[in-house]
Length: 75
Image: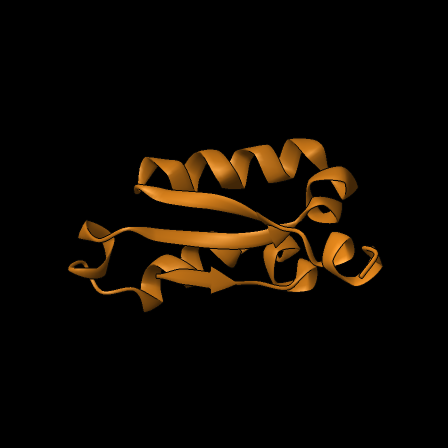
C-alpha cells in the first residue's frame, strides 16, 4: 500500500505519530510506503531525515513522487 502525502502533511511535526496511530498493527506487517516529493526533502533536510528514519524503523518505505517530471516531460 502506498500513502501519498502532501508536503504540508509530511512537514507537520506530528506526521509520523499520526500516521502510525492510524495504521493497525497488522498493516505494519505488510509492505507500506509513503510517497513524498523531492521538495519535501530539500525544504528541511534534517527534519525529513529524522522522519524517514522513524518510518523505516517501522518498516515503512519512502517513495519519491515524480510529479514534476510527469508534468514537464515531452510527449
